[in-house]
Amino acid sequence: MSFTEPPLWPSGTAPADTFCGDDNRLTVLASFDAEALAGDEELARITRFAAQLCGASSAAVSLVDAESQRFIVAEGLDTDRTARTTSICAHTMLRPDLLEILDTASDPVFADFELVKGPAQLRYYAGAPLISSEGAPLGALCVIDSAPRTKPLTDLQREGLTVLAEAVMRRLHSHREANTAGTQLQASAERLQFMLDSVPDIAWSAAPGPVFDYFNARFTEVTGRSVRKSVDDWREVIHPDDFDASLVKLERAMSTASLFDDEWRLRQADGSYRWVLSRAVPSSDDPETARWFGTLTDIHDRHQLSQEREMLAGELAHRIKNIFSVITGLVALHARGKPDLKPFAETLSDHIRALSRAQDFALKIDAGPEGNLKALLEVLMAPYGVPGHSAVSITGDDVATGAKAATPLALVFHELATNSAKYGALSVGEGSLSIDIIHAGETVQIAWRESGGPAAVPPTETGFGSRLVKMAVENQLGGSLTQDWREIGLAADIAIPADRLLA
Image (cartoon, rainbow, N blue to C red; front, side, top):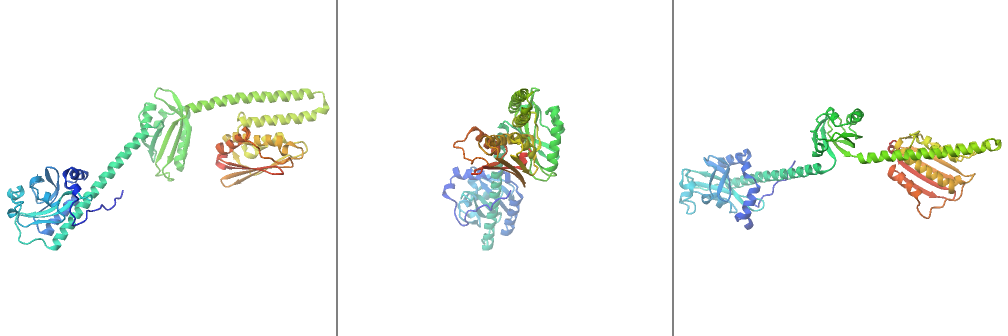
């Protein structure tokens, strides 16, 4: 931490009247925490040099409080404190410049002072005032001797003593600034600690190794256990079925200094388990030196709700599949024994089965990822083919597609295809649709082009389907969708980050 050069009170200027009274002056004096500087080596060197410069046997840095003057460093003195009422420095500090007394015993103001009459036998005194940057008189840098003098200090000695007094004030100011910064840092650390202990998440940090060296209070509150020091210590609080798999992910993240993100069950103080989202980020991209900062967020209620929704979606999907099966059976039943209807029935049944498969993708049940985007689109577009006419063509790059991305993709293209079958190119026999996939860098571009059908007309109001498509593309896939209602048919361009497709 660096400090700016402390400001000094202008040389040759008397202290500010505002701070000459003790009420304000003592407040400023207390801010320097002078007790902590007692015996300070830097001030001691300055004091020794002041004595040598002025040819004096003794020198001191004195600070004057309400009742006394304290010599925080002294050279050649046997006492560290005298009464303020007999302090020559108490007079010096109120001056704009040096005070020099060649023979204190003959001086009408100071002849009866303790240091003059007492064993110290102070006969010569020269002092430079110590004035804070606010203008508060604090004390003096003084040189003293037991013998009176007949000649005053030379101009060089006077200037030197003044410069040394300024060096004393710089040391005092630097000490105060460091104390102030330390107090502010401590207060900031206490506020941060209070905040970390108040948040509902568990927060932790770890040194390289990893060696876990910090947990907020929430960890003990939730788990009822002391902090974990090593990775293996976490076995006590992570569900046995989750620990090994999560450890593999953590080690991979730490070996590459990359984001760690996982979900597992955390043992609670009562012995039950709750699902948490565990995340950790490295302080740098160097696996050897990076520190780690992590959080554990309770997602148990969300996890249970998600499971319940999946069960409900599964039940709904199976019921819909049953309906498709019934329809297929009815088509086959009514075509039985009627050779002239058999080709039509088989084509219709193929379309129904394709719709059923597309529905599986839309509900993400019993479908799973197809491995790449083209395969998914082929399944979704299969119901819209016409015998003897290639109504739909899918071209372009093979792009890997994860299970999470399959659901919003299925919803988007199922909605686009349904609208085309109702109002666009796929609503007429001569209409056609092309879908081109371009994987360019970190983005996947999907171009949807309809032609040969009715002129595309923008909707007069945004329906549920349009809102569903927008939400799926922008919110779930993090992409963008633009549409152009052309005379020859709808043109839609979808851009999706490639990493979102892999999710």
